[in-house]
Length: 361
Image 1: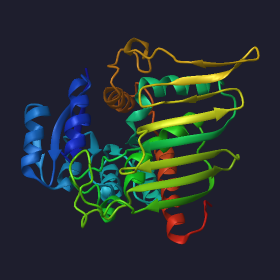
Image 2: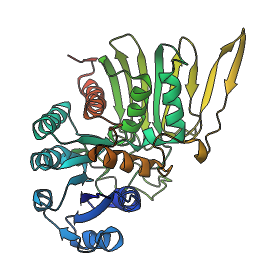
Image 3: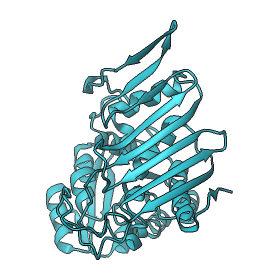
């Protein structure tokens, strides 16, 4: 069996907990190179997930230039996604980039241009599409169960779960806070189910109401108030060109008890659906003049999105990328779709800065 040789740039938490276990589990992939600014982290990742003879780098440019690497995973902070992705594509490597695709729409277009001139594949890690509830909801939408979807809610709300490690709370390095970190997942899932990628305008508002507080009750301990420069919550209202609207809510810290992360709610002219929380799904409608609510059984045995694959979202995501590289399948997340997510997030941030609606050209 041919194996795709994987190189990893960034060996932090998302690499160790999500991506590397998934690629190690895939018989069509082998991880041959690891890069991190911390040599110790890169070596620890190689020890746990690398193949025999796997190499370690502290300079990502050396890794992406290696003839021993077929595809690169970009698992770094947001500000360098564009530069690393463009360089890797130009070096003839397929790329999976962690979400968000970039911190600006202009950067996403540079990444797509590099994909086009290289002839290689580019995708973005929106793993929530591969959950059983998401897969089933997408199939129902494609079947026309909901009719025309004209209202949606994209929600990623944490009550007090601010990530205090790394550069998450650094607005300059991340390009924002919860909106770009977890709101991006909820928005991607919503656009995907709606199959609507043409925004007309948006209005947005971000808040810095809690990030300077102490004795916070935060899941991961009190945050550093000096380092916490990103927003603690953000909200946006998006109007699409066909008239549909999306209400987007994202927070790391909000005095709100009904926590939900990376979920969507949709309303169409034939029916609707919502996710009470991640992993749960309710379908609603009217049948023979009577209202109904249906709760599908979403056990692991029901998942058949990629036949023969593990049902874990991270394994499905990795399998989809590898199969596409081998010509045995298609990408689930296209670069154009991910670019639209970034475009809307950027519009919400711009609306906050100007105090006015942001219109997409």
